[in-house]
Image (cartoon, rainbow, N blue to C red; front, side):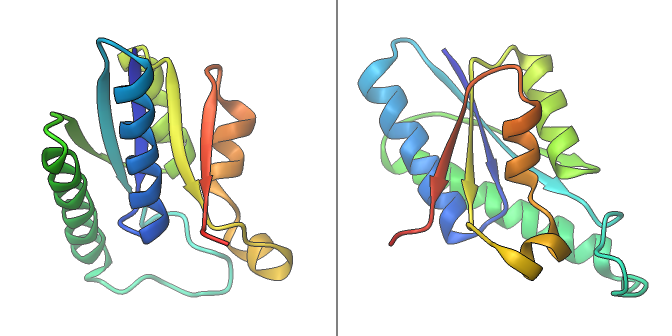
Amino acid sequence: MKIVVATDGSVIAERALRAALDLASKLCEPFEVDVVAVVDYVTAPAGLGKAPVMAPDLLTTEAEAALAVAHDLAAERGIGIRTTMLHGHVAREVLAYADAVGADLLVVGTHGRRGIVHSMLGSACEQIVRDSPVPVLTVHTAA
């Protein structure tokens, strides 16, 4: 089984990775886990103005850190993962990557935003769930 996990370095993304590793180790043999982080400095909510000149570097550094954390979390469990940094629109890149590697399952965290915050920021998770041809496991924030 091939599982693709999207991370943005947040606590909820770490919970999603832990859930994917737990699921895979309990239910699937053999399994492969790919963790992707997407650097998206092109898509910004309208009205926020132009991104700072250093935005690409900062976002790349954050993505590298998120992938390093994912690697460490998997290593703690004795599980090898493949990490990949992508560039572009988050949902499109995650879906294209999953298709390219033949993913059987996508795992993503969701912050459960609602109302004006959701309409301003959108939801990569929502678009992934809506457009994915393979099952998507969403992991929510702790209650």
